[in-house]
Image (cartoon, rainbow, N blue to C red):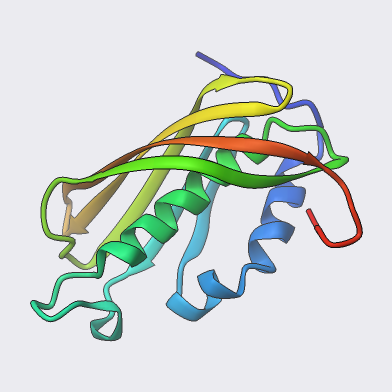
Length: 150
């Protein structure tokens, strides 16, 4: 299903908001694709983001997937709202290893206030990919206020 953005300027708005996410900067994640209703975030493997067995920590996997779902939803929202995750369910399917992790999210249903998104994190090594996690998220459009920036 092809989604329609409420704001023609959604891509620079999404990219500007992502650039303000200090956690993405801290972990080295990059926004690699922005389309109406779909976002991709890439994260190179880093040993300092792993747990005791050398796998990328589940919290890091959830972080990039949560942001991918949030920005997929945000891409369809009007320019005068902010976005917040209100709920998600994540299934960790295999250890997060590989050269890169890529979080791919898409909007399942877009509403005026609530948007439901689905996403996966895949590990990439060479040309091979394996799904390491899947998420279903509910994201809320929040009217702009002084304590929230887009």
